[in-house]
Amino acid sequence: MKTFEYTVTDTMGLHARPAGMFVQEVRKYKSRITLSAKGRSTDGRKLMVIMGMGIKQGDRVTVCAEGPDEDAAIAAMENFFRENL
Image (cartoon, rainbow, N blue to C red; front, top):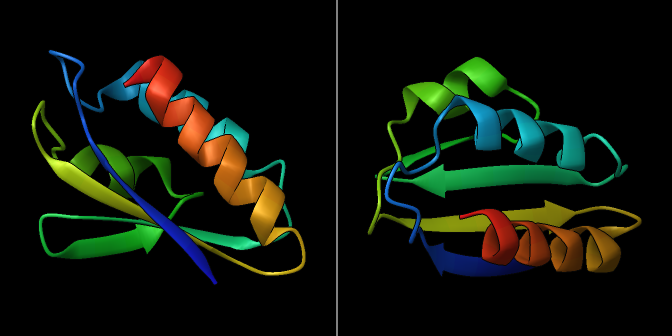
C-alpha cells in the first residue's frame, strides 16, 4: 500500500469539477484508491461522496493506493493534486 498526504491550496477546495477529474483519474488504475479527510474515508470512484466530504482550502487529505499498479497510481494522484488543487 502506498500513501501520500496533501494540504489543499485551491481557494475553492475540492469542488465539483476537480472532484470529477479526480474520479476520472482514479478509474484509470486497477488499484483500490481511497481518499480520506476530516475523519472520513471513501473509495476514489464515488464522486458524490467525495463532494459531500466538503474538502476546503487548508484541509489535509490522504490518498491511499493498494493493488497491482499502486506505484503508478499513487504517483499519478500526487501529480493530480499538485496540478489541480
